[in-house]
Amino acid sequence: MLVESKPRVAKARSTHRWRHALLVGSVMVAAIGTIGSLVIPRVLAVSYTLTDSVKMRREPRAVSAYDGVAPKSSSVDVLCQQWGEAQGPNGNTLWLKVNGSGRSNWWVSDAWTSSPHKAADKTVGIANVAFCNAPTPAPPASGLPAVSMDTKVWVGAPFAGTWPGNARSTDSLPSMHAPVYTVPGHNWKHDWAMDFYATAGTQVKVFAAPKDNRLDSRITAQVLSVTPTCLRKSTETVAQQVARGGYVVYVGVYDGGVRVGTITYAHVNPAFDASYRGGINRWGGLVGTVGQYTNNSCWQVTKTTGHHVHIELSNENSKNMACYRPGVAQNASLPVNDYIGYLGGAFVTSRKQACPTSA
Ligand SMILES: [Zn+2]
Image (cartoon, rainbow, N blue to C red):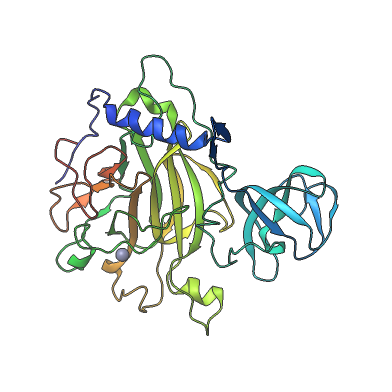
């Protein structure tokens, strides 16, 4: 029996957190201009050409109002990118906010630009272009720690389920299991992964809360991406691909609009359309249900005791890693929203590590 109440001990604010806040700030105000005779390079502007004539949309949606038409082969300066409605022959879901053809701040589907982005990528976007819907950091309320990507956010079990262990694959333990999914917006994989077991149809929910409960109102969650779990074989349709392993739902967790990390749930039948991007309740928000698929290389399950959700966590901070709950006995049953790990903080610096027991 494992019962552990959510740790709520507030710790003194570390200088570490401030260092990151300052770094982020200095990147955002990348200097434009000169100091004495030293020329400071401007942040590289990204421009693409249009591969067709396009309507200058007011929103990243095909049905939105528009202001004129930009001609084929004209140039657009990209301001930022955002996931939106699928467009073009390959279902490209990336949209770009651009200036061009004498207008500013209009939207064009990436499907109609010369950008290097591939329509099949639904999670990463264009490497050197900011996301438009990255929320702006909120100013800290007096007496509270500053908004930070290093804020300690406690993550709970998505359902009443069973930790891996004998009879189930011990390769599924978080100390062993390989993270396989790339963190949205980054080129690295998650910090740790595990399979967590429950029968098909069990509801999968987000549980994330700040360790410092004074920050309760600052912590939010967003669905970042929903993609098929299994790699698509060249011979199969998307429906066949999904039938082999369901979907991966990527949920970003934010402190005051700054992303602290990502919780990723794979082998899920989502509670929303795969095109959904946006808010989800961080405490009990429904992601979907535990799936049941055909036995194949991506879902190696032959018994109902093998039904599981594959969970991955990653910190936004590339140096401090997300960690998992230490000391859980193999095959232990955990209640819904029981502690499984941390996002944020500075608990461990390498992948697949247990959190300290003092975390
Ligand atoms: Zn797994």
